[in-house]
Image (tube, rainbow, N blue to C red; front, side, top):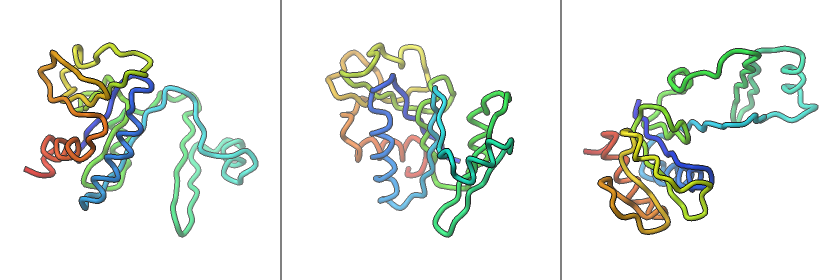
Length: 167
């Protein structure tokens, strides 16, 4: 499984870049899956929905299935958060998985930087797995490749080469 990460501080452009890369890589013919790490509690279900009621009743896993899509919700109920490896093992086969977040994991990543980010201190200084930078401002003094944050095509080219999708 080819894995490539998009990491950066809050409001650094991670989600926007991930979305653009999914669109571009799919346009190029690749099957793409994504994993997004959330640092806060989230819910994809709505109070009153049947699946919500199943979870409220105590179900550990609830699958919602239709002719268009399906989703599996797993309540941790005191269990530890699953590792990235565990989540990746549950995904269907694909050409590449883009992983948003997971700053401390040991896969190749591009660091996003924006002037409006919550923090602008470089993550690459302490993470050997960051192999490139995408920024909305001029970055100097870096030994890593630097891309304009909006240059999705060049970033996708780089990811294809870095993961071995294309030689």
